[in-house]
Length: 318
Image 1 (cartoon, rainbow, N blue to C red):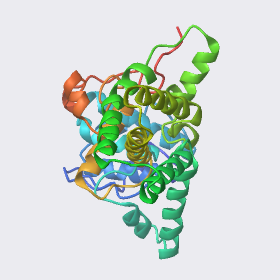
Image 2: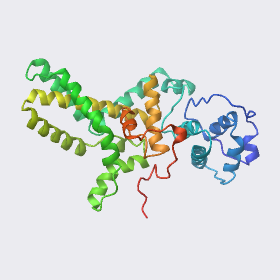
Image 3: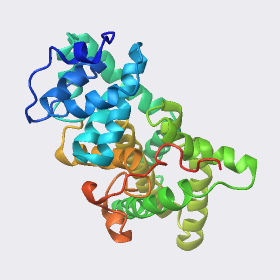
Image 4: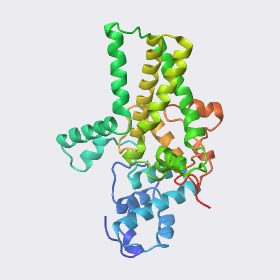
């Protein structure tokens, strides 16, 4: 990052303001962000806001750029503000650029792309409970293929549907529940979700832990077996639920990685989830789908949603 001098020097080589389509094509320096802001006609606001602080380090400049994005989220083009915030913090590269575009811009080789893809896949498989869930899915599929269990595809679909129906309620009413009066429970709440809002892209907070997934799965098995009294039917429900969980974890993982999904729906869901983190944590609870947000009326158009001061620290201490 370029070291700032005076305000006039910082902006002297910028192009004249003029509204153009945003193109945040890489995780650039704060100076690059400021240059882009000139193209968007936002220089006057940036000049005023930058005059409030005189940080010399690159970290200070990046923090100022982040704070500017917060200001825009409350005042101006809020859709653009979310993109700016995502861009300058490195939480997610969102827009027309993909991971490959970012690499090309910075001269990365084919080998770099291969290593990056392997790193992303490795992080997904090895963190949280994903590796165990994958093994459970493989075991159930193997039992179905060999005939050890009769695994009905319809019950697999039902298991997935049940997971998606409970995903919203779990996120809203359990993960966002108020702090417990018991210290050990509060510690679990912080690991499970509170701290994820503080550091959204931190891998060890991004995935559901085994101590949460295993008891919930066992509870599901007990309830399902008490009703169905058939191991194959229960296994099919578990398989569907586990596959849906893996899809949820993948969508959530991608939302907090510097990667742009390839499908339009994937890109839209990424933006959707990041609004929950950076605009209002009381809205947009759906991670895999917005359907239940629409049912429970926690879906809002971005421009109609109030900006919350507690997106990062869900329950500030009094």
